[in-house]
Image (cartoon, rainbow, N blue to C red; front, side, top):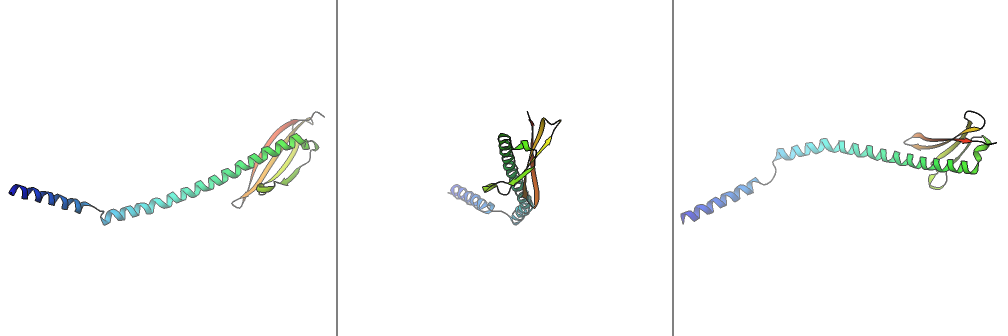
Length: 139
């Protein structure tokens, strides 16, 4: 009987130790809060920077796409042959973008350089993309 009581006493003592060992101390909680306080602002700044870069990348991608389409249109229509500068604003959802066409002699009168500039405003600054190509004028 003594053996059984001794065994039960050891079991109760082990259970009490397990119960007492659960939870965090005040120092552990404060250290965790301090770590979160130091890491969280840096993470939020990183997220902010990534968001700005993603927006900039999206605008540049749209501007390049618009410039490629406008350059193809100008070359197909032959409007580059009058050697004049043209400019306008894109329509519909791209009205924040403006384009400028510039045609100049390259090496002589028979080869022309055709430049398309696309401009837009982003974060209170004007941004631009430039596409150029050479065109042979058979005239």
